[in-house]
Length: 147
Image (cartoon, rainbow, N blue to C red; front, side, top):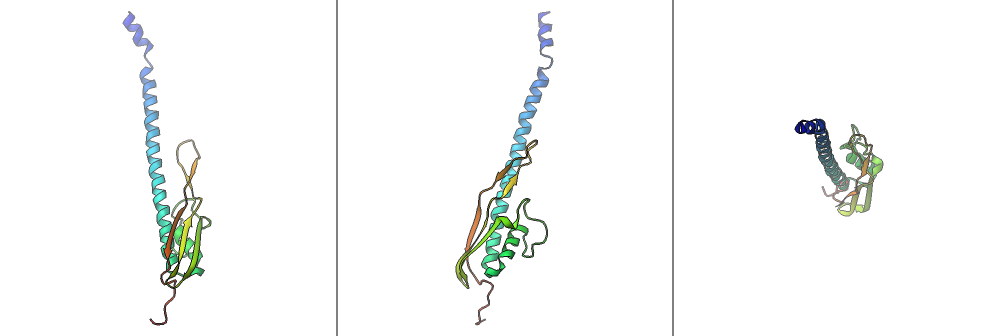
């Protein structure tokens, strides 16, 4: 009789243990997925800054709006969807320093990008660090007279 009472008292224990285990497992899975998304966004922002600096090193200073479009949209015309959600040309800075034919540098940076987490029941986001790339000028969009 004593053995039977102990089993009756533990009827719901398996369900409680299962729900705790599933909750921990689900949280771990969401954390892994979110970490992967953050890492992907980090790589995409690094690549966008590099791509913009490369485009800027080949074009004159007057094309800074096009450089921003290359960073955000992947093309100079600024058509299509942004490469990343919440990425706008306002977050892109283009700085020409003594820029000319084969002289000076250009720095393209992305500041204050807000990465939105997709964790359930939260609207949290992460402000990503500044991404910056500096390159030396090449042709600056000019064709020398000797060509």
